[in-house]
Image 1 (cartoon, rainbow, N blue to C red):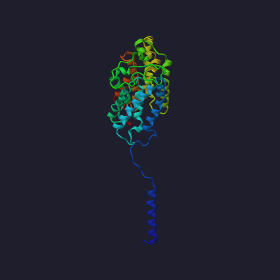
Image 2 (cartoon, rainbow, N blue to C red):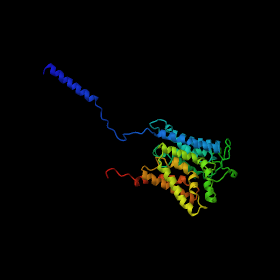
Image 3 (cartoon, rainbow, N blue to C red):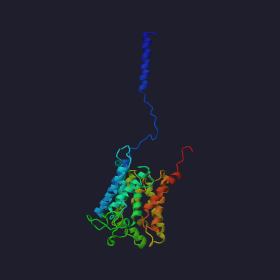
Image 4 (cartoon, rainbow, N blue to C red):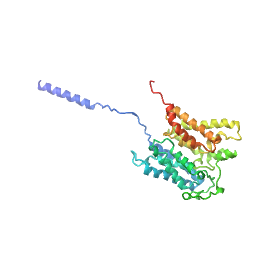
Length: 351
């Protein structure tokens, strides 16, 4: 081989190797191949932002007590999350905002005169037994805030069912906010009142829909303003943070089922409008039933889940021993979610 021929062969090899280097490499990876920009911390913090107007409405009606109860509940959640929660990829477990949202939601289910130490214990139980015991964020079977509320309902039934009407006092404390742990003092009966659901169930006296819509009623902190909850629901649906099928299914089921019952005896049973606006239905529907971890995965399963919650709410409110049934309805359907997912499992493509 001549020198010229040898140089040509070497040049071709170099060009061939250079072209192979310039070609894009094939990357082999597992699904998902497309990633959404929405992250869990972003969703949690956006939920927290939408809860701020509802909390401010509670402060407007119930004053300083609303702030103190909320602070105690949030503190219980944050302390438990910080000391018992395992650090994830982001480091500090408090950064994702889930503990803050749980504390806010738990506080909104409590009466304004609730003892602060009980609210703190409720936050500890909500995170410890409602979240961490199942494995942490994304592993819980039940909504953590409702787990804390159910514990407080069972442990302190008198304190959690002692309600006060909004009376314009901003700086004065209500009920037994500052009661020491396990204090057995006698509650002041003159300040306690019944919620609209209790008045309707036991006395057949419905509250005005305008008062229910604006929040000028006695009840938990989250029952302060139905209008704000409706606006928050529309915003979260527009942002695709919650599944629209869940609030649509729950509210439609409650309206239809209670409307049928109301037609038989209007003077005894509440109207559909009252059933939708009274109690914690809107709060539970927007923020607790829509928990993506404890709700079904498929659209058909979501409809079964939401209709079941609506039916249970009406059954408990009308024929149950308690005037309110949102908490138990959501927890029962949370327990049924694994069965619903198995029953409505999507068909594999090609079979």
